[in-house]
Image (cartoon, rainbow, N blue to C red; front, top):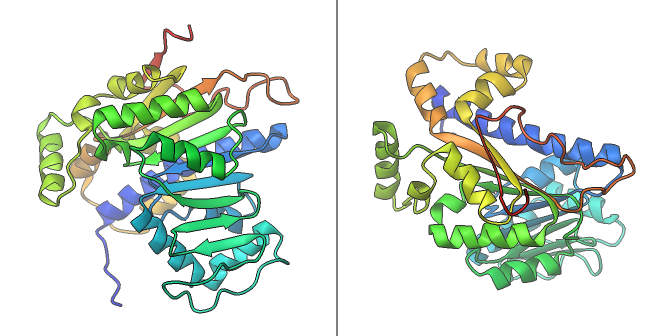
Length: 324
């Protein structure tokens, strides 16, 4: 298959997104590791995300990780995992290794990849590793009962520190559906952070063109007009069972929050002269972080692992009146 070379603008955008989210993941994992508490990830609309495999290969996998997506997506992902030995090796290593056996050729209806510890089932669209170390389960995020059932099946501890990740997922849902999901998660996880990466500022010229382009491709941003500003992104969380929220646009994250040395390394890789468009694109994406600390004294240090979580001083913030 011929490799398609993307433009420097696209490459830098991918880096900005990855580096910003990766920084928050590392901050969360460092805090939980330092305090001796378990770390859980819940990834909404995970698609073919490889976060867990990257972290596992670096010896940094969270205690438990659950990925959710539509069944047609999880079936494809399970089949891909089953057919890639390096990914299976990571699953076996995380599960203890000795109990696993080779799947074979990863055809459409394979048996379980493990009699005890690792199961990769493409027909069902499921992956189960160890005691919830890594799980991929099908669920329509609009179906709250299905989401709750998946959380229970994966064995997530709703009182343990949990990082919930949503990358360009909620914006494709109707506002009522995304609000219901956010509220359910806020009510379920008492000691958690939710990190939402998606678009913002839909009403200026660039935002209108962005919406139009995606609608023409059959991907309407159903929820964007309900969160047109950083303030609205924060308020969506604090109105729906999250104690506090803060937001930053990606232009700020890239210029002022990412590691300067790594950013400089990336900028030397390709000739880049699309600065005006670059800043406009970055200003139309944001990261919003919501925090719940209802189970505040959760580790031996006597302080919550989510204290100070985020990128520092926010461009916008909100606190729920329910928790003030």
